[in-house]
Length: 421
Image (cartoon, rainbow, N blue to C red; front, side):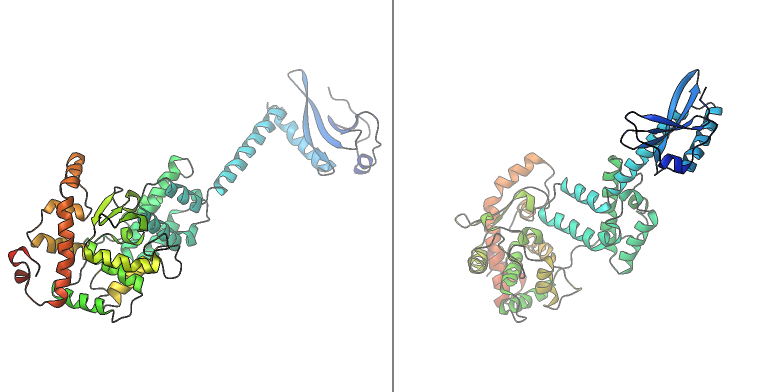
């Protein structure tokens, strides 16, 4: 049984305890002692017996733990012992729970939404333009609201407020895209046990459906006037942007393929633009035959950006590609077609005109548009089979555009005899 002393300890007695060469004990009674070490350290301990064996429970270090606190802790431990619990084992388990809780809280703090989103993006195999689009949408709409918030603590109401806010600004399509990207990020986190639910997916029906429609293009009958005005540059578009718009109309490539084009992609000897897989929507190399008109435009462009990495550098920084909005602003808005046409509409316009000309194999047109061929064997065959035809077709297209600028003949007259003139 624990030793008893007639005189209980006092704070003064503990504080003035003399130092000795060896550790010794001060007794308070009921098994509570203070171990005084030669270096002056003083530790509260409670000695108790369980199943006939003596054990010792650490209750703190004096003076951080006061005498009164140590006595209270002794009483709590004594109650545990009376209830059949071993105080040492009980507190060991409690400390393990606390340690696990602290570790979990740290893990949550160390995984804010922004970090998880960036990790998710880094594992995707997208074209450069699509990756820039995803990063931009998160930076503009999501990160300001909960980018630094632990992903495990983001509520359903927070996600709902974000999506409805984007929709309220008339950007329903953008809201849908953000919702889809949020869902993928939440799932990415769930697979790594960083959050429990995908609230974005649960809110899939929150937003009204977006009516799908083809990209609006400039009306066929207005195209000649549009091309003449563009050639005259009557709205004074920046020269690099002007050349970019002209080349895009002549090649009908996707804007991302054009904006991120680098000089080493252009083979002037073979009049061929080899767009690498990482710059294309379908993640495969895309070949674009260059007409004489496009080669001439690229030759002029070299005087402005031949020393740059990007063939179409931005106006503010030559280390970055031309902004998508610069093409929209110069090619659509300032030309009077805001809300009436889209910069991507030149692709559908070329598709329509080339097919209606009845001069080109539809498969060659599809290949030149960079559309997906589901059969890989057929895709490889078409790529080789139609390249020569596509070279002729792209020259025909540029010649046709030139003809529109100087002729008011009907479509039937221009195509008579298989010639654009």
